[in-house]
Image (tube, rainbow, N blue to C red; front, side, top):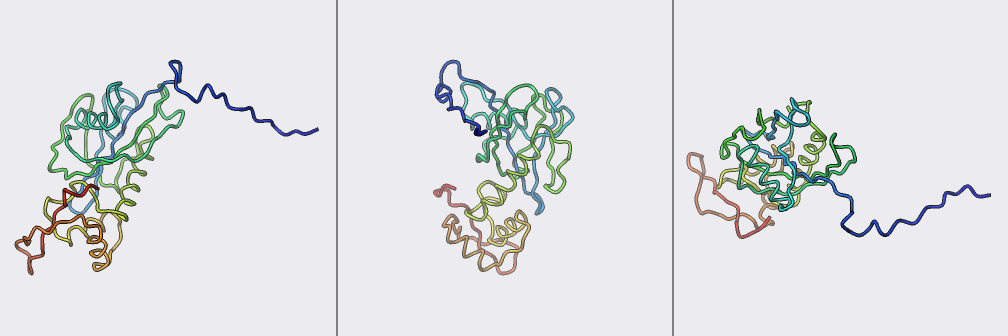
Length: 232
């Protein structure tokens, strides 16, 4: 007699959306990276209420019925940090069954890149602390599964550098190729060959020569800026 387990066919009624379909909360969490003194930093907050008080967390919040995911991410950044009008990109979806202690919550993570001096921080909403941390000095007392989300966002950022020019505002509006290469090296943690780096960057066709040179530096290196007509 066979002991093989017979798999039951799936209930096809559970494959389509109906009024009684399972519902859960959807949130967004945003890894905001900054670049200061050749060091990559991350913005974290502490909240005075809710789950994981006295823990550092990424800015995050729940999506409302009339919002898209990007609407929610923009709302969260403005409501919790005062940061607004920045470019951000989706990273990953997290749906572990018990990732939130209260109920079933699925979160979608994003990452953004800013120059901290362009975005003064404010204590808003239920945020009691907000601070920039070096990526090598991220606190261990992180709430929820944010340690994993931070790791994934950091790796996503690094992997993106291999395929396209970094988007965001980590550099001034106008910059030299040496400054751009320095940014890449600081984020990737490796030394890049100057000739190969510049060849790769020019192949992307996303930089525009401003026709100006950087003052105060011997030889006057040319200043470049992102070509806004090219979408990253």
